[in-house]
Length: 350
Image (tube, rainbow, N blue to C red):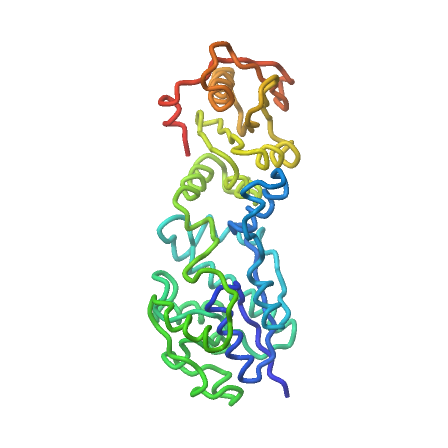
């Protein structure tokens, strides 16, 4: 019987090497990649679609690395959207956060549980990852690896080929599908040995090792997440609320009002086309950013927002800047203001 394994494939060097190693051992690989909605590259790809041709964003390499790895090694990759189910992991992680708002242990348990369900669905025999003992500070120490294996429900159905010789034998080894001597004993934070293996095996096209694309590890983004949770009932949160935290400049004007100011044409056009359920402010006669307003702004808040928008539209002007404000319950209107003092708005910035 051909043995089939489900690989948790990010497209990074480790998961690519793990998949290639098992292919060399005759295992049939089916890759899976879970989309949480918190990936930097996915966000950049979306915004790039609205940027002018020739912009720096459009010139970036915004490929899906998981699909690239599957194409290079010739195994299928299933992209599964788990963004809605993932929100409680972000807001209520049982095992806490890392250095920012990254619930890494809960994330691994959740994703591996999903991988277990997928394994059963497609009739595979086990799941594997590219995890390396001691590589990541929060999730890849021995006790944490054991905790994740157990609480995901996979137990010894989970194989970590790159460090398997340093870990207890798993089902694929016990059943004789894979010889333990054919697995590896990599550990530690250095990627030197992985890069040597990549050269030896001819694995050439992979992203920079030790990279990552999760917004939740970014401390600036984490401040916005905390602000959102502090000012919104958890029961009211939607995935879109977290998606727009990646967009533009954010400022908390008052307990009831926050604004997002587009940073370039791509972000402005995305706001104008896809976030029309929120009030928006646009300059009437000058080129400038689109400002989105969230919450329940008072008249004083609107005055502050207009002055801030004027600062980002015409900071040196000697006459008030005019804007068209639409989407408020009180109706659309024209507003104007002189640019705000740059130093005074720093306290608003998220």
